[in-house]
Amino acid sequence: MSFEHINKSFGNVELYKDFSIDFEENKINIIEGASGCGKTTLLRMIAGLEKDNQGKRIAKTDSISIVFQTPTLLPWKTVADNIRFVLPFPDERLVKNILRLLELSEVADCYPYQLSGGMQQRVALARAFAYPSDLLIMDEPFIGLDTPLKKRIFRQMIRMWRHYPKTVILVTHHREELTAMAHRIVTIGSRPVRILNTTERNKVVE
Amino acid sequence: MQKASIFDASDTSLRHKNKETMKLGNKNNAIFNVLGVVSIITAWQLSAQFTGNTDIFPSPLKSFVTLIELSLTEKFWIHIGTTLFRGILGGIVSLILGFLLGLLSSINSSVRGFIMPWVVLLRSIPVISVILLAIIWLAPGFVPFFIMLITVTPIITEEVSEGIIDINGRYREMISIYKVKLQKQLQHVIIPGLLPRIASGFSLGMGYGWRAVVVGEVLSRPQWGIGDRMAQSQNYFNADELIAWTVVLIVISYFFDKLIDRISKRLIKWQ
Image 1 (tube, helix red, strand yellow):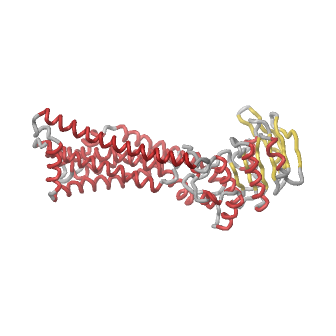
Image 2 (tube, one colour; image 1 turned 135 degrees about the vertical axis):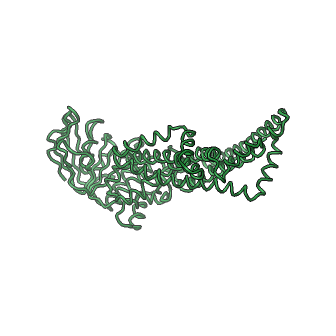
Image 3 (tube, one colour; image 1 turned 180 degrees about the horizontal axis):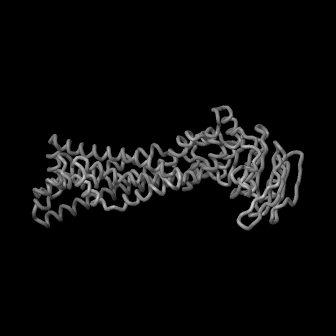
């Protein structure tokens, strides 16, 4: 999945100038870089939430799931209902399976306010995988969580991905913690943004 | 508000102790509530004795006896029913109208720009001005209903309008990414998301509204209604009757507060 010749400025600041990037389809891709380097802007453009300088969408597909930095769950729906909410058609088997894979079966009837931040993010992740998308985008989804919890959720995510393969693009600024679990890691930085390094792996290490 | 997760606490004995402490706290509160009510009645009794004129300042006992005597008459209940009917009808119509206006004003900033000055105007006008103008414009029976409408509608409109803007801000991107259809947005996002605001706005509005309805009745003197009875009592210097009707109003206001609270708790169990 390639995105080419991206141009994006904010006022006088040229963030992306003729920038191109490739991702491996149906694999786990990580974009990493220092805070404020432009990762979120790139992700939002890929998701179609922001347009380039010409006002055009760079997104190749509109079959996208997203996990934001905050879970954005509907507080008035239970865990299971939050997942059901995004399904175009009812599929109880899918919902049950996803809850099981992410170890959320016990809290299926709980409301988000009853859950910790980590659990709420897992529900957001469950929702993203339940939705029939080709591309799953995750913008620093584990921010604020401690390292063991981050790794645990990421492992659960890989388990989910094996059952429901999608192209995953995840943004993080925690290189050491998660990059062992990705097929491709792209490091970006500088201004205008450019690719500083690309690492490939044949398979993820859980 | 971020509450502690029930799945985080590992010490169950600590949770049990907290429950016991809360029960004790509630018991203490109830005792002090009773003491508070007793102090009000005591102060009332002492003031009545100090005044020494039971026509002007009746004792709690005399007022209570008068209330019982009134409640044995058929007309007492017709007066209450009429005021209640005006208040409830006004409240329901305000809820619907306020919701629709709030929804309209959230469509785009131009519509909002048009509607909001009306909301601000209605919230700013002193209630007494509205009542006196309504008496000039409308038949006496319609004045209290009109007052309730003017009091509650702008509150609901503002809550709905601001609520929708807030909900859109929070969930717009998620809804857009997951391609949630408009009907589903309304049913599963907007209306449930608005419920807490509507409940608190309605509770606030009805609190003001009941008082305004009765003042409207006092001044417009429709044939039936608590306000009309209060004006009558005042004309004939029947302070005990005036106090009896005041107690009725307090009970109505308290009842509706509790009713709205209970309904809210059932509808909004996720907070």
